[in-house]
Image (cartoon, rainbow, N blue to C red; front, side):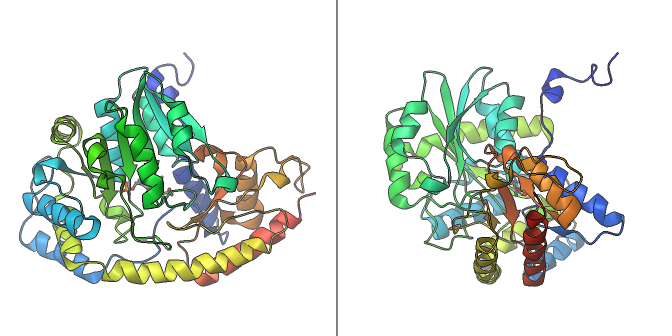
Amino acid sequence: MSKTSYLSNRINNLSESATLKMTQLGRELAAKGVNVISLSVGEPDFNTPDNVKEAAKIALDENFTRYSPVSGYPELRKAIVDKLKRENGLDYEPSQIVVSTGAKQSLSNIILTLINPGDEVIIPTPYWVSYSEMVTLAEGKSVFINTDLSTNFKITPEQLEAAITPRTKLFMFSSPCNPTGSVYSKEELEGLAKVFEKYPDIFILSDEIYEHINFVDQHESIAQFASIKDQVIIINGFSKAYAMTGWRLGYIAANKEIAAANDKLQGQTTSGTCSISQRAGIVAYQDGLESVTKMKEAFLRRRQLVYDLLNDIPGIKTNLPEGAFYFFPEISSFFGKKDQNGNTITNSSDLALYLLNVGHIATVGGDSFGNDNYIRLSYAASDENLKEALRRMKEALAKLS
Ligand code: PMP
Ligand code: GLU
């Protein structure tokens, strides 16, 4: 029996998460005593705000330690409804909210809730690594709309319409985008919404987890267009806005039927998420945006720092991302070059591994995001680490011949 033959096809066909894999490789190298700078995983380098931590301590003392309702405590769902109204101008009822163990689980839940084998899911590239793998898990088919630096990685309504077939069930995207940082304006979203108006059986998975890390404008949600609101499933969470990646807290806002189906799925798989995280989430939303605003200021400064340093590296092309905390520079000019052991760099993963092993900086190859000509750098790191990382990157790339 081959080593993996007893595993399901489902799992054998699944790729490992490249973001988590590169982060783990970086950790392993660091454990051997190497000074590795991680620009691989996308997580704020800030601590969770004190008021939120305090709420978790109180939750423990008050014995919020038992199973919660599958879709989340009513107070949390109400706090999310209030937030959607206050910050996004959107009307939802608590029955339309399902809280989960993170935006990642919510995305996966929705795909499992909507996709039958063979259904098509339109995904603009570059996309966040897990999107297409989640579709594969559900036996759906990803249909990609390719974009690149020349259009600031955004699609047009014409491209969207051309990708639609009778099998299209879902469209999924993030704005601000991981990995490109691109942000769709209200007008651009309206253009896409007009296409979806014509296809009421197509749903839109709108991943808005980076909504507050937007340097160009206020956040715009595609759910604001009343004619398609019921087709939209908003995905959001606390990981990025409140530096709560480890707490595992996310949610959907959707029409009631989808929310109820999501509750049913979660009830058979994970149940309600951590009670303590939920109590902390209530306070995060009730107390507002002070900590997010501070983080955003730091990200804005670092964005400029990294932009200038990247532009100083021969062979690299980049845009100035409008949001999130990633750069997605083009690096294909290094393909075909050789490292110091005579190995040829043939793709973005080779380059990411080279940068890790020689430059001791962890990045992620663009191939896992659907475009091999790029690599992703997270700038959720200290200014000193960013300066040193970009210095190492320049030096390591110059050694390729
Ligand atoms: N969507 C995007 C675009 C992300 O970058 C991430 C990574 N944090 C997630 C969803 C998942 O976030 P969470 O920590 O809430 O699962
Ligand atoms: N979303 C982050 C990233 O893109 C966290 C890692 C992950 O969940 O994949 O790096």
